[in-house]
Length: 104
Image 1 (cartoon, rainbow, N blue to C red):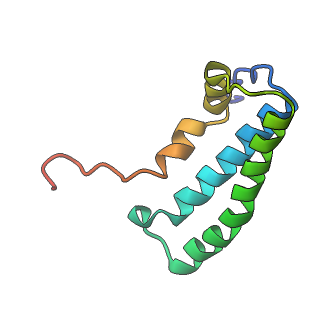
Image 2: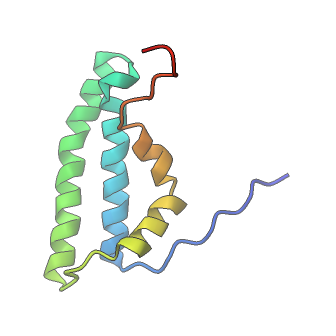
């Protein structure tokens, strides 16, 4: 049986697509660096080193949007794109995990 088909991405400009892609790459790296998630220091170090380049690419995507006159971020459309690309789960790795009730 095939997995359910994901909803289609909303129509995005090329610059908006780059923004979403670069943003999610940064979020993924931050999730790997998150000290509350555990893991080894080498993995965190590698993610932190990669973060520098991905942050520059994210900056460049935003600069390109600005240069092209895309001065407004259309949050509803970009939120749909983030949800389609599993952004909620990916961004949750950046936060501090909840402690089950009674274990604080």
